[in-house]
Image (cartoon, rainbow, N blue to C red; front, side, top):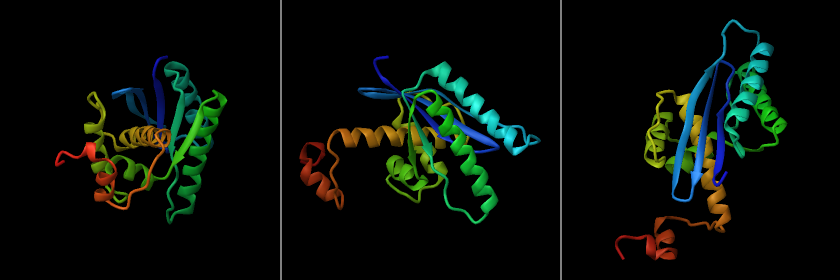
Length: 185
């Protein structure tokens, strides 16, 4: 494969968002984006098994190089957090079983990477993703676009680290350090 392929995951025990993102030198292409809906009547253990099996098939069919996954956020419902953490752990185990490198990003870090705002809404993230990728995103599911956002965040993180990422305190500091990127100069 002459390009990178990232599997993005938004873990959940009722709906698992996923996206397959191809990285080319000048464009990002979404190969697949969807949600795996788990049966509501299934036990928690059965859902974890279904997640593991489904992700193994996804990895086999798409052959990604890496997986980016959204980390659980802190919530008030401890039982929900425990279930979400287990779903994330099973997803990570499936990726590691297939020798994929796994990268975990907090929801805030993903939002910053895609929108520049850590407090952006899921709808704002989805809207900006449509401008970032080179092809049409064919889903209205926020679980699926959250998975794509994790993959895009990972790509941006790798890109900036590979170029020797710099820290800027504001836009003017960035433009002063990169005058060729300003249209006003």
